[in-house]
Image (cartoon, rainbow, N blue to C red; front, side, top):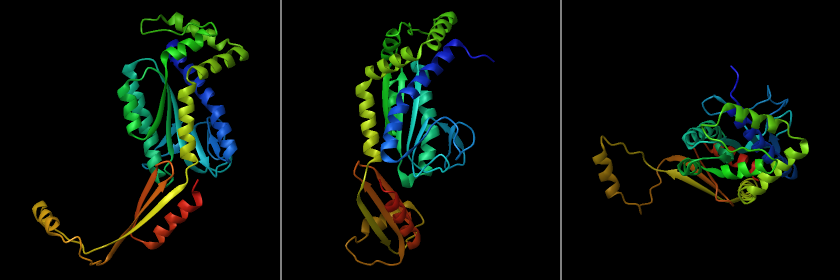
Length: 291
């Protein structure tokens, strides 16, 4: 079934967002020896989509993934997942925020030792609650307001202001105008859109740099010993804790190692191991991949 002109218009905005972000991400990765996975052919994966598997063995298509140790032929470890999205109406914004979270967060959990940066570059109209929801889940999120999009299109002579009452023929006319832009006019459009949101984009990339350029600031290793206590109910367990002598030194049997790694940007990675070799393997991984 043919897609409506309004849907095509939304796709165009999404493509523009990716075109604006791509050169900045590519320059950043090139300067640091990192690999930027983006839509297109790559020997390390099939197809042209950036698809990653989550902890539940499901695959999700993403916009951008920054990898350490990656190349066209080898998939590296992910250090950043970045999504770009456009929504015109508030009624769709929460669903889109949840869609991004549902795709990215399980993948990030699969790579928890890497503590990857999670980013969302949004445009159009998103509710304050939907933005707060994403930020509370660890996403660095910016919003390019709807008016900044309209203003950028106006700079190249295109009226991009519309609502739910806008006829399809007006959408179709706007789409035709956009697709007919000369390379110079399209570059001017992207430059204006970038200029209209320069402060937000600068803040986003500053957070990205701090995350990827972070360094290990502290490693805490906590060996846990003790005698395991079992209780028939909550009351008995509560009584034990109330009467427990915390000053008593009685290590008992070894239980596990708790390890906490803290980074210069405030990130932290926590892990537990019952086996010494596994704990050493974790520290070796952190040491080899510290950035």
